[in-house]
Image (cartoon, rainbow, N blue to C red; front, side, top):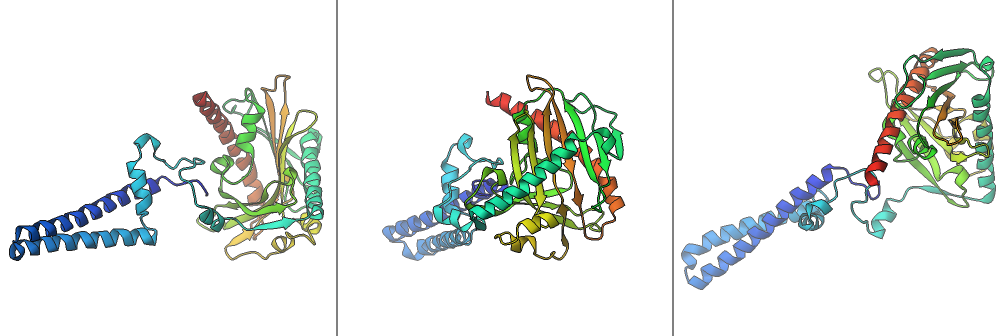
Length: 369
């Protein structure tokens, strides 16, 4: 990630600084020894020692500079890092800009993208609007709509209740739609949105069970809109059961969190490969990605329309009812009964970890103040 360095790069910088310093010291001492030897006129005795010392110094310098040229140790960056006070040195915190990249390096690491026209954006807006209606329909459905309801026993941290799971088998779909609901006792909309929003480097990447990464796989350029996000969000899951269940990849069109006129907050997403989404994207630059075949050992999963709905329960908007709608098809030959068993546990674990992450957000804000 641009502007982000993992912790071990600082150790590499320190090692490079030691190597560079020893190279320079050895080379300098070798030259000084040779100079002293010739000045004293003891060339026969001192020259071999000085020559060997210079030879060692030069060899160390060549090794150190070669490692720096190969990118193993960045000697120049190491020297500057070693001279900086310890409090000012980068420590690889996520999201912290530890060094400035040259424009050429930033351009080299620029992600692939597609240029959208106004008609392309209109089609994507049609996709997100349909998914918003679908997710809100599930969130507003009465309890009689659902086939199953399971009430969680233990309260989650910072909540007034446990997680309630709803399930429904729809006639036109092979998999069931699930919804997890929990009442949050004390949180702001901003705290909940920061924890539950989906983008590259988001907090949800750390807490979502079985998720390996969130990556912005394709950037939108040209004519864009906040209602379609910054690009195609690719979510990759981890293999499970010792590799028997392989990784899944989901390529999402995301409608980021926004506030409705009634005070609710909504974020929705659907995969490009979903039949209705793919039909709406024909003739756009995203058609090739939507129709791309599956890769070996990596199955493309389908998401018919999932999302988050945050409903305020008081006028001060400190108490919220969080609803997580999930309607997936894992594909790849995975029995649906296995997936149906895993979904309720996934929603329960995610909401539990999300509430713990809200507490961390609050603590970070308190430290900043």
